Length: 380
Image (tube, rainbow, N blue to C red; front, side, top):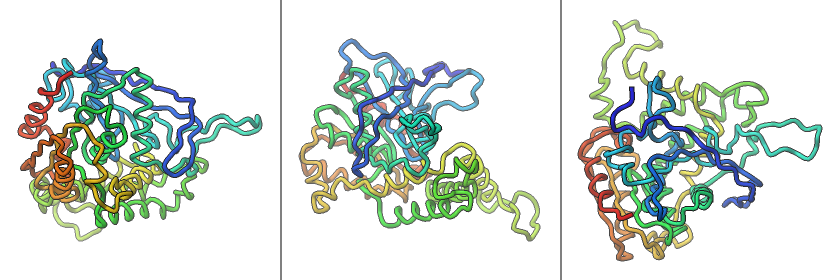
């Protein structure tokens, strides 16, 4: 059953772009598709749009359900809908699947554009799909807004990798963004975070069924590598307290003195790993983590983030969580300082939460009230 304040039954749409997109790497996508969903109604002035940018394993299905019988709603459904913090009575909300994704937008599992050689069969990009960056995503998102006839965003919002995209929007298109909500994010990754990503990628790339990224042709899936990558990720997304409270040292049954599942934590990790390996594309995972590694807006400014943000014009809400050790509050405060150095309007909230990095996805009342209060003052 749908909740009273749900956006209801939703349908994904596809926008096709035939004009080439030049990427940060210098490679060119001759054409591409972007899958997206919308919630709420675009007003006559087209001034009430909020763009939601997704994190590493996210996609365009942000809110609502595809059918009443669906067990799960969109990944940020607790936040978006009538009278929810991101109120669809007021805002026209867009969620999309980034380039390189595996949920409909052009990515490694997509078929290459048809060749002029009639003898060549349609084949997926596989390993030949180029590496994409946060900058590339924002440029393709701007193309989508142009396609929809939207020249300015009331707000752009994202958590984690989505927060990096929200920040990049204000840098790349300062005139098009009025407000940016950056949640559980950082201006770049620490060496430790990059190390976690590399271990996850190595788990995938050394899987015997990876075949250098062309596993589609071999009709295989590097399932073992994906399982390990996801298990590692879940460990870093949760805080020690959250893991202790949820699982502690609980046994599944009596001790068997074996390497089978003995503890509840092991059962949880294996379940999450198996579920993810059945749903997500390995080549996409590699590209999403690489985009995280590469993002650093201060790189071209001698490491000076304040200089990187000197042309930004948006107003900001920056939110961090006390138990988030992967994107710690200190990293959010780096963004706040750089914005204040440029005399920009910034609100900052550090939320006490036990869920670690995953807190930005949770229906925490205090956290949601902060977003609700800020968004209620956004003029459309």
